[in-house]
Length: 264
Image (cartoon, rainbow, N blue to C red):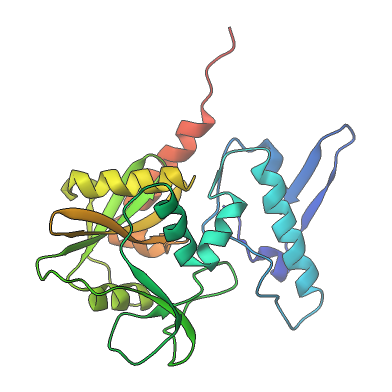
């Protein structure tokens, strides 16, 4: 396990060519191009640019280059391109709708005082933590549900499996749960989740070519729709709520993509 912020604390990180025609990425003395699989907890992006301190922008650029290079040498959860979906959460909904997956209606623009469940217009990336948007700030929100019997669940997917789920009573409850990292999660194991919710969550991650994501699904009048796709869910928070279930699912994925059939 390596700290993504380690290079800012002086941990060595180098990206360069080998003596042959390959590329070397050495992070704290570990040659990561030899890895069979890589799991990245939060996606990195070239924005926001870090300020303050010596060479922080250069270190951030080097870290991004290292991750992009490693994605070409081993399976990665999630690949660097997923940062686009983390930065703009509604982009995932647009892409799913284009692939004929039912998506719940949403609005994107300056927040207004309408009592609805507004969320930060920018999602979690390595150097940015979403906050509750102020009035007038760029934000997005799902459309209100019209059925009091609606069911809402956020499904954690790692690889081709569901690791767990968190149910929410209302959109406001869902927003409060995921905007406050201090709130404990009442997570259920995958066996307790409705198969229809799991199926839609898994299909959504496959369509978006994701390995690691939290997909929120609503069932309203027997129709299931995707409400949100979180490409950078809080892994530690989920793992704590699932008593180590997220780490176990991560380990299963790492092993499944690392083990190769023997050459005959």
